[in-house]
Image (tube, rainbow, N blue to C red; front, side, top):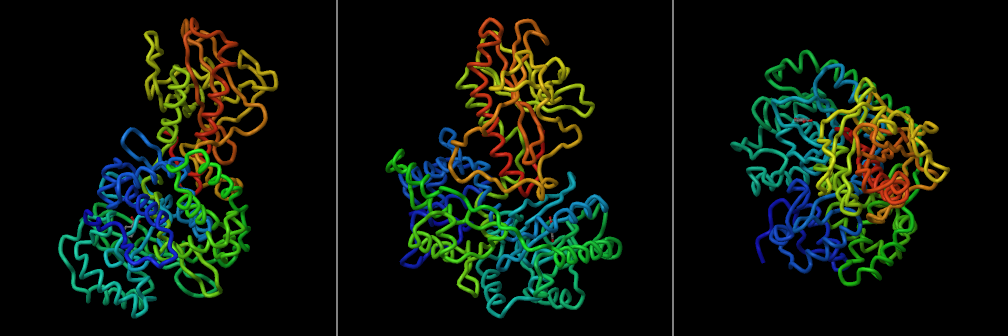
Length: 575
Ligand code: PHB
């Protein structure tokens, strides 16, 4: 058996009741995450030390759940896997309560601002308000950093027990170059343990902490703890991150620390005033779904893995700590099944028992796919679905947004069909909004399907266009419901009711006929339009509606489902 990669936490000596397929599935998700989201099945085989047939069955199961896409020989993480991290972040509640203040501070200072929680002897990011800058690396939500190379680390270490310090010292000896932290460059040289002990003492005395280029040359940060008003303990740490070309570490302390401290005081006040969390709906019908999938896929579907993963989705806002009975009820799983999954997760460090016979998810849940997907974009989300639509219809598919003036559309993704006469609308191309079907959808000038849809697309104004936003998410966090798709794989069905669409008939160009439908964000705002272009010689306008619209509408709903999961706690750029 090949040696284990150092990035996968040890899974030796699992308790007798642990679910082996769940341990293996988690190992596959962690390897894919470390690799940046894509790995060949043979690379997964090497990295996990599992047999090829086992990797194949795990990949098939994860694909059925919608968590990975199988692309030739590669497994690729897909947005639905973010529902695991979303469950943790919703249960934690801090992003929902604090991220608006972090974003406002980033705007005010024109510097990146992040929120991090303690994760054993590391820190893990739960929010990032990142300025686009060329100079240094920036971290993603879910990235794990060694405590001693960060500004928040010493603040968290003020609360460490003796056991925590021992654990930290052991890790420093066994991994002197930080290879178990793939998000950071290897440590160039080892620093004495004493340095961190001293920084921790200072952080305890000062109530703030600095990172003077501990991760990489040029990167500096200043941090202040946000305390839980009920316990007085550190709930998370707020950081302002800069580059020595703009601020030295001393400069950060003198000029930006006071403003960070003011923002943190406001965050603590927000926590004090926060109403009790409202429990969202638990995931529905998951046990039924896994049973049906087993029937359909047989040996290729590892039911215990699928059932085990759904256990994590039982957690959420107002559902931060659940008893075994509550987990079983929320997922529809038998108590014994839920219990074995919780025992497995406890062993893997993904849930932790709390004092009153409940379990709570840990920040490590974010290591299951979240960081690479937290940097996705709408074109990236849409392209695999558009590829499937083009393969099904043998027609070209495009995604478009409205430009700032509202007079033009811009194509942001395109999958071309192989036709002799195919329409050439490359990414970035612009076109007059009123003369394109996508433009009419984005202007809210679309008829509706099923309610006697208007073939000319000059109908009743469904779907208001968004002209000022360039990303989806964050702002709608408090607004929209928590109606995430249950983990029922790629088979999401379009919602009921008439679907708006627009059709243009040889208006932009002779022979060009296009039909478009809206793509909406979590609040129902139309943020993009998805269209299919055909040649007039191939389909009549009636045939466009009959043959293309159903598949087009279904594809838009798959894109929306992914977008809604991805944008719950991260900003998803539209381009
Ligand atoms: C970050 O948010 O990127 C960050 C925070 C604290 C550090 C370094 C980087 O010490």
